[in-house]
Picture (tube, rainbow, N blue to C red):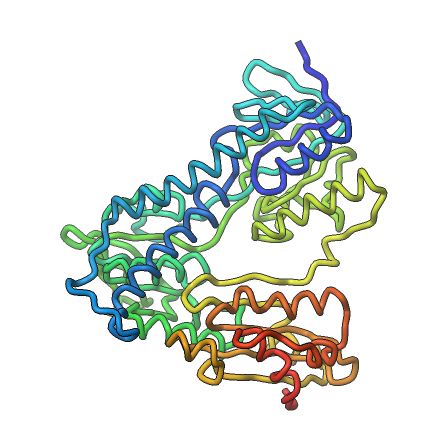
Length: 458
């Protein structure tokens, strides 16, 4: 028998539960489908568990630096990886169960556990249940990409998901991919005590960043004992005794990295291949991302795609914003758009990188006349007090309109302080508004007005 609803949400990642709850609160009859673990990537094997691990690694690092602060540690710092994993599991499992409990307690909302597949533009089957609705919201997220690397089928490897099951310390962790996921794991496992080598195909790590940002992060990681190999254009994998070897160059040269375990961190692919999208007429691009317009609508009336699976943002915060766009447009008659979003993200190494707006490279390509202010973290009192003076703060503005174009804060609390700049950008305030604000001392953010008072041509 067909079960009929006003709206059906497929997936319980960041955008889906809030959307379902909001529709249910508006009096609509709603269903939400989850095939595995409630909460999606962020809760189960993304932001929450990985940042829990980052916190454990930071604790180990700070304990090892006790003498710098006059704190005497009698014995060498030891990391119990089983307890580290148990702590991570506790945080992640509680978060997932909280999402499940919340959804199952919402009036007007039915929860279906199983794999949902479209059978037509207005029906989805979950096991023996056929669900019908006038509106569908696809929120199926993405998973780790596994590249077609020669020899990969002959060795064991890990992804960011299966790393969540690791409760031991690898002797030497090889990480393929020098971007956000790979670098966070690199630093945390080095701080846990493993040898770590990062292998990146391109000439610099985190290729989307300005070279100055990339090279500084590389220096920070190398200073912490991480080996970084770039320009590895022809990677191939082979067993080497009990370990794994990665060949780094074309033409049979001898440059290689050898380790005990291999982690692949080379991007994400959307979970759209087994949804029956073709039966609904929903189009995807060459990479499998669902094609949407500026309001998250697919080309099929009554079907939206939100979150990572639409290829319009790869972060928890952009997924949540997709929910806000869809809900406000449908329930409040608003006209919110994806294109109103300002690019903002962070790299959670220590110290973190907070990034908003355009990079300097993008600004130069745009032809704008720009001004830039910069301050090294060695000149930030809060950083000096904590002996965490690596990195810098940089802000770029349009010389003619006084609009803030972009900023990078690579340093202590950079992931938080950068929001001062982001808020001013959303308010479309000239940089002078932020320059003349009075910030609290001693903080990292207090230097933002100072930087804006020392601008020079980019």
